[in-house]
Structures are given as structure tokens and as C-alpha cells.
Length: 259
Ligand SMILES: Nc1ncnc2c1ncn2[C@@H]1O[C@H](COP(=O)(O)OP(=O)(O)O)[C@@H](O)[C@H]1O
Ligand SMILES: [Mg+2]
Image: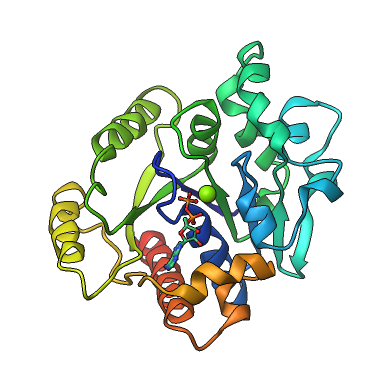
């Protein structure tokens, strides 16, 4: 059974997509079978892995909305054990299309059941909102990973996010857990980054990853080459930071299993 992790933060530009792609890349490098679900109509996870939506006829939108489209038909291979379920701009319309449907919050979860035993990890990259897509992403997940950008307004909105997660646990997915928060775009020259850590600690005691992702221009360049940072510049500080994060997440699974 796959461990399904939703990468969520309703703020845009905090590093959700970057974290999804690069965590997935390292997990697959460590021998895990990984599926990335691009669940943002902007399709940045797809393009960051070299998939151009103009060349695809079936993506996650068709899987959700069209009962005749099976999830297998839409999944593409980035590497043999690293797959992507891409997004197209149509996905923006899914929220409206889903409103009419029964079990509209469970559509992604129901489809992922079909591939659950083919992967060790399924990472869902969510859009920057707490709308119906993100709710589907959370309901489909076992755990939530929250990237937090090291900047002044970083903590704004976190209460609302935790509140949403609480409501989903209460009404739709009791087993949902918070895996933790990861600090992104850390700048050691900036005192603010330490302040963010201290504030974040109040929200997530025990649940902040030790691996902090530094601001690193190579990380920002990699998607335009359709590559994770691990393939684009393996020696970069960004690649190393994501490697450590992947190791922490692998270890956290062992700890959970032995409990
Ligand atoms: N560690 C980093 N160093 C430098 N730039 C980064 C880093 N992480 C993300 N970025 C850049 O910041 C922008 C927002 O990141 P992204 O992952 O797309 O955020 P989100 O998915 O939350 O909207 C992108 O242009 C990305 O390349
Ligand atoms: Mg994104």
C-alpha cells in the first residue's frame, strides 16, 4: 500500500510544487516507486517533469470527471519507478463539474485506490486554495506536508489551514495526519528566517522537519529544463537539502510502522 502525502498550503509560491517534484525524485532514487499527482490547474508539477499539457489528451481532470477514463490511461512515466499523473488547464473547471456529483470530495481518493499497490509513495501537489480540489487531495491522503516559505507573512493563513484539516478529519477522513511542516527558501543572511522558525514551532511542535530548504537559484532553474534538482545539479545545496528531507520522510515511516 502506498503512503499518500498531500503537499498543501493555500498560499501560492511557497514551494509546494518544488517540494513535490524534488521529494519525489529523491524517494525514487532511494528505490521507492513514486507517483506524483499534479492537482493544480497551473500544471507546474507536470511541466517541471517535462510534460507539456498540449501533448496530452488525458490528465487528472478526465480521470476525475469522466467515468470511462481509467487512471492508468493518464499516468506517464518520468523514469521507470517515477510516474506522473499530469494536469491540464481543464482542471480549473473540475470544481464546477464536481459540485453536481455524488461523493464529490472522494473522487481523487476513489481513483487512487486503483493504483495504490503499484507505488510506495503517492505525492499530491495541490493548488493554492482550500477549495474542492484541495479537499479531494486531503481526503485522498494519509498525511499532510506543509511547506512554509521563510518570509514575513509565512504564518498567515496557517490557522485556517489547520482548521480545514481539522474539519476534514472530523467529517471526511478521520485517519488524516499532519506529517509536518518544511521550511522553504531559507536565507541565512536574513534574520527573519529564524523568527519564522520560532513562530512556526508554536504551530507544529515536534513536527518541523530538520531539513530546511535554502533559497537556491539552481532549484528555481531546474523546472525550465523539465528536471528535478537532483538531475539538474546534483551537487547543489538545494539538491542536498531535498535529499535530507526525503531521508527524514523515509525514516518517519519506519517510526510510524514500529509504533
Ligand atoms: N529553494 C528555492 N530556492 C529558490 N527558488 C525557489 C525555491 N523553492 C521554490 N522556488 C521558486 O519559487 C517559486 C514558487 O515555488 P513553487 O514550488 O512553484 O510554489 P507553489 O507550488 O507553492 O506555488 C518558483 O518560481 C520556484 O522555482
Ligand atoms: Mg504549485
